[in-house]
Every structure is written in C-alpha cells, then in structure tokens.
Figure 1 (cartoon, one colour):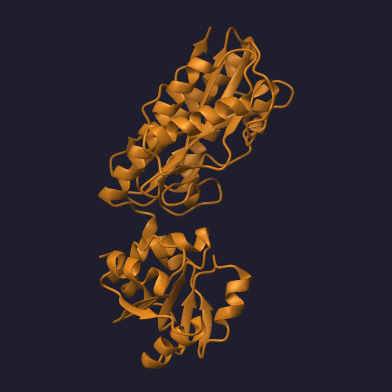
Figure 2 (cartoon, rainbow, N blue to C red):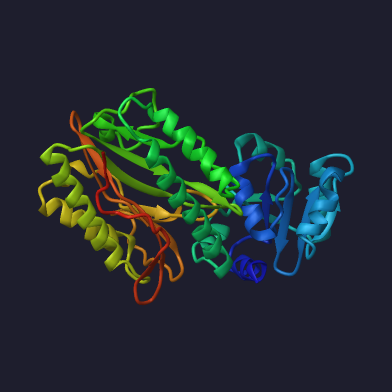
Length: 357
C-alpha cells in the first residue's frame, strides 16, 4: 500500500523514478526502510510508476529477498553504478529523483549514472507523517518503555549522584525492558543547568533544592519515543515552582487543543500565548514540538514557522519550556497522535510535580 502511494506521487513529479539509498547512512536508510522494510546496512531501491527494484550485493541477497519480497532483486556483480545503470537503461529512465538526505560523497557516486539526477526529498517524508496502526503501536511501546525507565531511575535520584550515572541507569533499563536502542545522549540537566534546553548529562552532582529535567527516549521496532519530565529534589525555590506550574498549564492546554487540521503555528500559539501572558514569553525560545516516528525529529513542525495543517494520524510532541539563566528551567513533553476530535496521549508518566525527598 505504501509503495503504491509513493508510485502515485512519482506520477505527479517531474521524474521517471526515485532512488532510495542505504549506503551505511542511517539517516537516508530510514526512508529506504519505510518503503521496503529492509533492515540491512547496504541497499538501494529504484521505484517507478510501474516497477520497483531492490539492489544489493551477495551479502544481503537472502535478507533483501526475505524482507522486500515484492521488489525485483538486482545483485551487484561488479560496480554499484553498473547495477543501477542496468535498471536505468532497462526502464528508459531519463530523470531520476534522489533523497537529499544522502551524503555528498554518495551523490558524487550517483552522478556517474546515465541519467539526470533531481532532488525529491519530500516524497517519502510526506508519506511518513500520518502513522499506520502498526506504527502507532510501536511508538506507544517505545513510550511505555520510556515511562517505566524514568519511573525506575527516580529511586536513585538523590543529592550527590552524577547526572551521567542516572543516564546510564535509564539506558540499561530501557534495553532490559525491550528497547532496540536509545539515543546516544540524554538530556539530564539539574539546577542551573536546567536553563540549557539541550543540557546533556554531565558529571555535575545532584543537589538538594534543585529541579532536574529528563529528556529521554528509545526505539522499538525502529520507532522512537521522546518524553520530558522535570522533577524536584526536596523543596525548591518559589520561583521555580511558579515556572513549573506555568509550563504544566501551558502543556496541558496544548494537549487539550491539539487536533488534526489546525496548523503547527496555531498549536504552538496555544502554549506560547499562555506562557507570554504569564510574563515568561522571553524565556520560551524554541518551538512547541516536532514530528516523531522513525526519526526522533521529523515533520511536521509545531512552531510559528509552520502554517500548514497538521495531518490526521500525525505523531507530534508538545513540549513547552521556560529557561532562566542562573536559576534553572522546566520542560514537560508528551507524544501524541492527532485525531479529528483531538489527540491520543501516548505517555502515561505523571506530569504533576514530583518532589523527591
């Protein structure tokens, strides 16, 4: 079904076919996987209106034929360019679209093909926005693992513990719970470091009276989760409590307002306007959210820069925050699926302030 949708899109483009590549490039390989379900590290696909080919060498022949059985397999017997050119010539391809996520070094290889190359980045990405039932199930499972991992690590959060030690505990628990993988680095930012939206876990020791922000996620069946929670270590400053309550209310309002058909800008404004009215607009500088799926960050954007309607079935994050240098910061984030009436929240970890004694 997905391949047929892509072939319909190709009809409307000024290209004869589309090249998808996974030349040990994990970024470009996401699109190849989405269309073919091939999980190997070396593979290519050329898809036209009435044909679809998968290209690899003998190392991946059996795997490709098992995972992409509906594709005509072409084995590389010599050079990659010769294999791809055999398809170009057979199907009389004059203009071949390519995924702009490929590296420049890869592009130089494809430039030797006997056809014109034309960038066609958004074709597959547009299909990836609205999630299937299976995709929602995988993201939901990744969210469940993330919820459970954070719940587990809170038993170890106490003054004198390093942020990095908490990061390691979360990662190990995620694998134990069934995650495929986790992000290379987690945001674990305590005290004044909480003012850094992307404050990666450091050697800093947790102190009493601080907030600590966890922005963590994992992958299940290739699909990502992305959750942020901020918790308190003992009693905190009244201003920290004030900004926590403001962010929490803004986040709740965003989730309550979210639905398919509203623009990314409109959803962003729900959270941003509340924080601004509360007097902290200058401390909320990033967008409210982003798409989530095979990539942790993908389309659509939930920000002032997106005037396009959010698609039915899209998975997006809602993550407003306030960050004050010298004091600290708060961010709260849920992953949601957009419906016609509203949204489905995939995270279940509590959002009310948790105070660890």
